[in-house]
Length: 146
Length: 150
Image 1 (tube, each protein chain N blue to C red):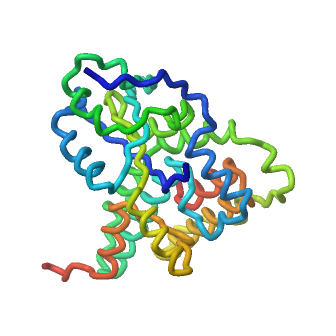
Image 2 (image 1 turned 120 degrees about the vertical axis):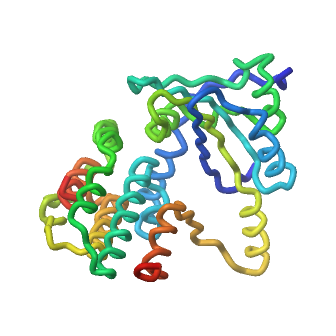
């Protein structure tokens, strides 16, 4: 199967992962065919920096993970242990994070239409929001004293 | 009840590392510099760019406050830096074989007078050199640290 572009989304919480709170939005993204969620792990980063990961199937009878579960189309191991180690650097020590692997279906659709029209997407790059804000501030500086 | 799913092993090559290596092999690293950096490097570059952009705002408004600047410097994440250096050790060395090794120091002379825009373009050049395989991870890290004065 030909994949669309993939993106890691790492969301951390100070306490347990509130699956029932975030599940509706995940289901919306999937149901509207904006993304597929093709892999998932839970990553703990201990206060001393030690990284451990947990699989979805470890959360039997956990209502929060039961809420998320149907939105996860596959848990196929594309996220490797090396990825987990790399991504864990983003996680605050002492926090737990949900690591989701999104496949951008919307971009696959754009690619198909563009290809049919004789074109090709040569680059699609996401700019992190803080960078966008900083550049925006340079381009449109707030009035002094305003 | 959770859905019944097969047991997975996570022994693959890794998506983040593979993306970086593929760009180098395919020679598309320059065109996509910034796209395929491994996560922490990318995050660091983003932080540096945000910092540089903020610096530019300060310059424009002619209100550069040395105290605030020092604060920004202090916010640079030393852990991400340390992690990156640690990871540089396990980078495949084969990529380095056919590569000239310019002195990292000569690429990025640090200057206290460097403005925000200059800093940003120098960081970009460094990132391009690293992505193109001209600089090793270690050289890149050293040069960037020098550039940022850390």
